Image (cartoon, rainbow, N blue to C red; front, side, top):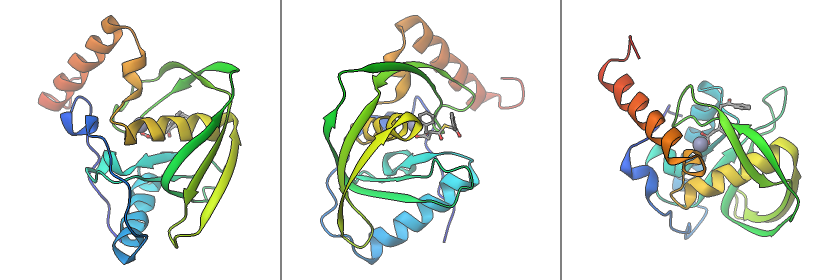
Length: 170
Ligand code: K1U
Ligand code: ZN
């Protein structure tokens, strides 16, 4: 297994639209293992392949307290989203140190394949629902800061560029 470097906003590669996975084969299973290791190492609850510069529709998630319930979503599709919405604070491993409110559907139904190519349907609410919607946005090339005002987004962009230049003082 290997730790993968995570792209940091405003890296333009974060805006790439991911392509469907053609086959859940050994290469994809290796990617999934590396993404899970990277997500756990970074203390994240989710990670999309886009964030590690792989532009295929692969997501890993673990919202469990014990960090022992990995979920693998290959070619995920949201087939239903509740009209009911809620404002939740979100973070992102690609935008370290920034948390802000985003309005999302409170519940979603998602179809996906697992790493063995088995299809599954997931009904999610609460943090899992928020995380699934956040990760699916990554696969479409969208970062959560794009839901914020242009003023906030520009401030975040400036802060991220500054911390890249001067990691100690930013
Ligand atoms: O996609 C990512 O960058 C992972 C991201 C997932 C996420 C967290 C919170 C709301 C929506 C999506 C993170 O894991 S951010 C860091 C984090 O560990 C965290 C933040 C808030 C709550 C729980 C965990
Ligand atoms: Zn993110």
